[in-house]
Length: 481
Ligand code: P5A
Ligand code: ZN
Image (cartoon, rainbow, N blue to C red; front, top):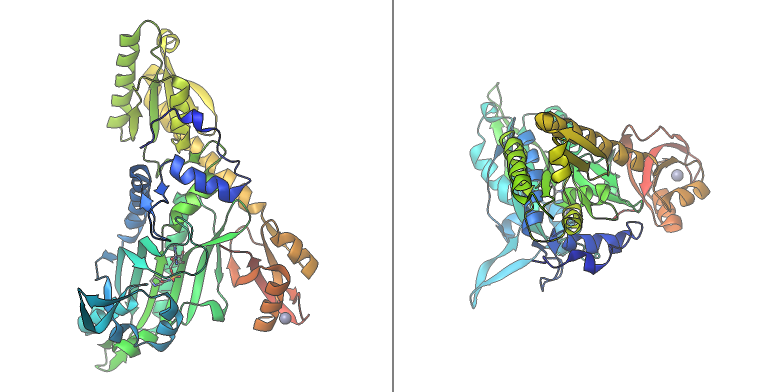
């Protein structure tokens, strides 16, 4: 990896130039290497992988309260994938096919899962017998493959999604499944709350719902350039798949009934959101909850008293590590300035500097990744770092909320919509007709993302539709990734 004098690489492109900044940051901070020779497939560096592990641990901790983790196969026989007609229609252009075993053509072609409904539901049909088996709530974290034709981007639009967390639930009634949809939205809210990523939640227009769903609720965030990124979706599947796959149960009265289902998913886009939301011109800025290194200690050992400084650094590391902090001491033989640069690029929340002057004053100097500098007395190191870390996390959250708040506007006319979507998203009255949504898109290159918007950042905006003037409800409109 690149341990060369990093400062010599020159500064990152400014975050204002978002695409250039994003691409450059991903490899300099050692998140992803984009040089793998297949389009849309990328490599996780160890630092990126450590971030991924922490982010997905948060997700697992939330899901494990009332879901169980399982694992289903990657390959789906064509006969299963083609069973649900809306589903296969939605995915047919995106499926990768395995057609041969060696040189022998397969009797039944095998799809690389684009998502796992058709791998999981035939098994659910075998497993579910009675109302006592319900609700069933399973999830898996797997790779999925989608032959995306839009511009591919690391972590954002992949052909191999490496970190697809998909949950699949089964219920006795449509109403129970819709309560599960609400529960899943709450889980995703909590998850993104932990990552300090503000979200906008809305119901996708019918033509944009998941293939095979009754309705889709989407979680979007607003990227630094004002475009939205869909970072999670929750689908009410009704009984479409249970009728297709014969997922039936005997109810309390002894009658055979079709089950009702939901599914919901998140990909490594959640990491794209963390990187993009919090990063700055000097590199990554990571929330302490997921930072692979939470505290880096830089001993200032130039000149005399090297041993004393080294011992103090080791003692500080021991104190913090045994309290559960992920802490590293950087003892490399390079200038302290080069170390600061290196760890700032990688998003470490708190840096401790310990030098001769700190020894004399019986203190350490602590600097957060947002530039807050304080002296912590040696005897109060643990509490001092805890407090500083907590205030850093709060500041990060506030900054992200300010960003999103500043990018959301209410519009009443098409002129206002056009203006608003050049820098962010807008809430505007829309009648619900696809024709009007198409007209908005044609005029602004922004689309109707959803209605029934739920977010503390989004005021109500009903009134006459911005296109036809008929009665309209509040619609979330934006340009999306
Ligand atoms: C829900 C889980 C599904 O596939 N089946 C199981 C349902 N929904 S989805 O909306 O199609 O995908 C879920 C989320 O995955 C992200 N996503 C992607 N991320 C990176 N690259 C892609 N090509 C890609 N496609 C989808 C989105 O965040 C989406 O909400
Ligand atoms: Zn209209």
